[in-house]
Image (spheres, rainbow, N blue to C red):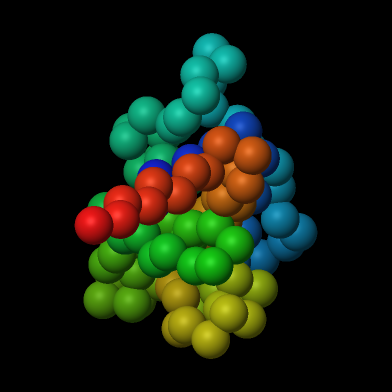
Length: 100
């Protein structure tokens, strides 16, 4: 079993237009509150795990008619609305191996 830790303090917000923006949890917390993520994403949260991190998306973006996010969509997904990329913290990720 592996435990993956994310570098929430290095998250990047990819808006539909403009350059990516570095975002951080409020009050120097280690992770974002759900409400903070929903504010950035402007809706219900969806999560897509990737090799190098995780995407936080608006789960209803397409159904709501939000514009496609070309910048964040370069990973092979059709993503709609704002998208947050959170990198994996390779220093804190651990892999637990059990042998029989």
